[in-house]
Length: 65
Image (tube, rainbow, N blue to C red):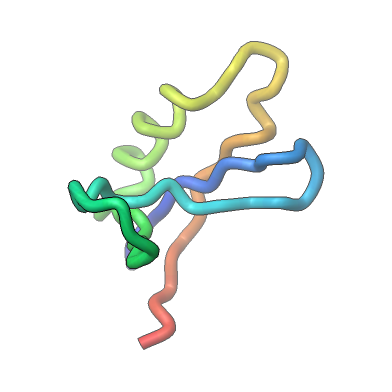
């Protein structure tokens, strides 16, 4: 099982995954995945803003492959 961090863009229901930095400006985006929820939570904490913590969450990630 892998974990990912999601950020809400509009404070309601527009969620996106944090993605890997590929070093290129293209549309081949891949979610940044973590082996443990604890590692994902450490990264999520960086993105959490005071009084808006609910706009960042850690989720289990299931590949569509």
